[in-house]
Image (cartoon, rainbow, N blue to C red; front, side, top):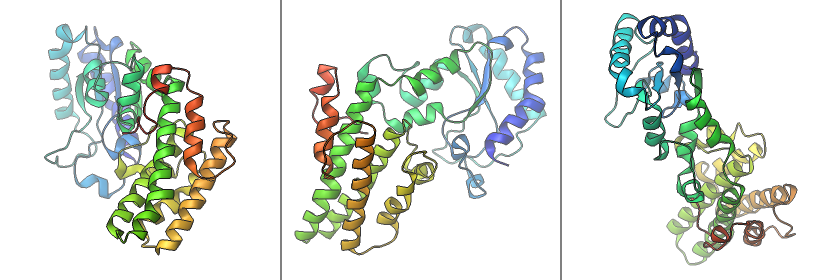
Length: 310
């Protein structure tokens, strides 16, 4: 059973009643769930995942205004609960581990993941927050949210990225994919800089993956789970084997160049299909310029073409 399922089962069978009895006054205003760092929060965990920083537990989120009066009581209740009803699965913590369990204020949770205590309020916050941070703030499941505030912020992040920011991010990744894959990869090979060519190839894959998530209106996870998440995208997930193969298969340079062009052709087709570009060519840089023309915010449109990626 996946960590998310184990966590929900533990909450429903034991946690809900425990906190309802231990903290009846504040219980209707609490949120419970598993969201954040870790393969279990994305649903990507397997047996290997359980060797470190894996706990099928859940977090309790309290509104910041309620914490002064109820935080200590809830912390004690959570500690007593885990002693009486230990998590179904728990592994050793690594030095850099940060398990998603225990009590947090809602503001502290979002600050931990995206750097601010609520959904972004400005285009700058949307543009310059790493996309994988948004993925960590909105993955997993919320089991119960009596107050509704935790879920409201979550839904704002999932649904409300300004279109101009989305276009800017897409234009930047499109331009960078052209630069690293269609231009610099072959140029580096001609210069005899094979190491630099491999770096260009890796950057092309990263930018192309970023394009795919944007074109699907999804947030990409931390790179460790990037290809796993790519396979689940509704649009163009068929490109995953080619993108992964460019990095993992040790392909000869001419075949890499062919794969790059095939990937770019399919990306260009998708840009045209979504009415984001009318350029008939498959070289991606002109498509990036077409995307930029759709941006209505003058400040965003005036940024450098390649600004806006993580």
